[in-house]
Length: 135
Image 1 (cartoon, helix red, strand yellow):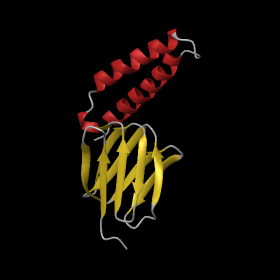
Image 2 (tube, helix red, strand yellow):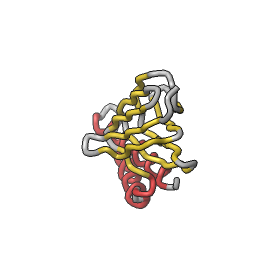
Image 3 (cartoon, helix red, strand yellow):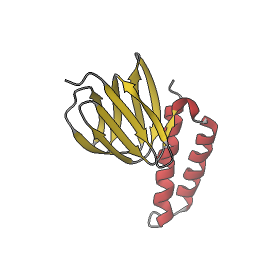
């Protein structure tokens, strides 16, 4: 069995986190799933949501957007478009983004291509607001 579990959270711009963790919880498109050391290998798509990991018995939260997760017995690699650690999220900015997206949604017909972009922006903003409250 694996002795440690290494987590890497990678975006196109940077490595948001790399380190040894006790466990990680990932928002998969088929539902949230947890990983401990020794997990069976798997590849999953990641949905917009809250990713968390436990290190030294302390949970850390990230707001992530879509991507993929590769799970191996001793390593989890999460490749996502964006990853923001909870303590670095500006809640007021996230609330403004939510209001802007809600306003766009109210004005646009559902058939408009901008409607879907606004809907996704709303989901991201709400996720950021929810994660910002976590420590």
